[in-house]
Image 1 (spheres, rainbow over the protein chains, first blue to last red):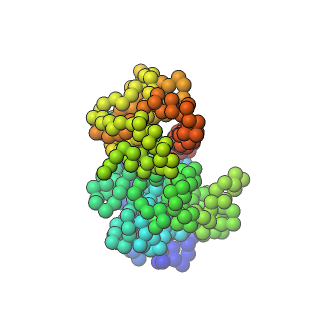
Image 2: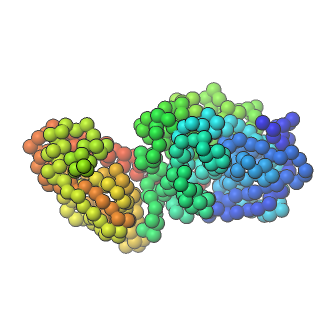
Image 3: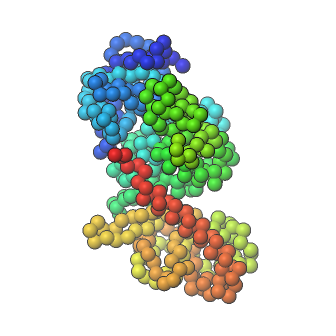
Length: 280
Length: 153
């Protein structure tokens, strides 16, 4: 795959912020365009970039845009740490550094011919969105496609307009649930794992992509297995303290693996034993 | 033809139960329908039934004077609503309100309790199945309490 750090993965390329969108109270989306003329940016759904806020620091953020669109880079993140808080203050026209894309993608091609269940928790919808774009672009190659999305509260739902649009599609089943709600909310209440038992898919012919907090992924994988989905048909996107993104620094070591180099997307069967290790 | 017996015997909750037990249970069953907004039961009332939801959606809520009703869970097609009929003092712990037109099979808890007392094998079978539901709800509640989507600070 061609990337803009092809010859030197440690080289940061300047990108200008074309658009900033506040998604929820603590999440925002940056749309970036290259400062200089350069090759179109290609990535596979599930991959991430290292984004550098000059003078503050660099962090890994999954790419959340459409992989078919190579002219702009889209990243959605939550304002939680020093870098993301500084990033949330940036405005249109400001410049950040980008290197990437890095990491393993969702197995979009391998999923062809299967039902596909995407299970997202919280901001985990962002790394799954490119996978959904890619699947919808070749919708005829897949069986049932189901998106299960759990958020903390109605106010924390990401990509509201797109969810409405997806829900209106006849060939996509979208279920949204929240953990907390007042009686004004007319949708589902309950954790996202409860949706797996209701969703319409054939567990023997299903590939599941799961992204969210680790505990949510663990419990979702158990529910999916309880429904009959094999562990090696379930894929999770891991998150660890990634610094170099190329497996040199060791910060993101996860058992015998490095999340930046061997992940972030792993078959659940490959990581499930490590997910229960406290000291890891 | 869709008989109560067939619907209940094919429902995941009762699947695999001996036919004679299904017949016993059907003796305590009735089709019911709730309009959108209608309360199915309210917190504190005597719990004499449980429901197999066939269609629609039900919100379980608790009323707080400060914040009004707080929805803690929604249930839908295929779900079991209510297990307070099984545990003394047989009072509902939450409110259940139909969010849309909801069709269900109501099972008379008093009737079932009597049958379970006189046939402990049936009682044990039902208790095992309810224990599974209670375990799932407890796990889901714990996951909700973990607030896993909240920002780490």
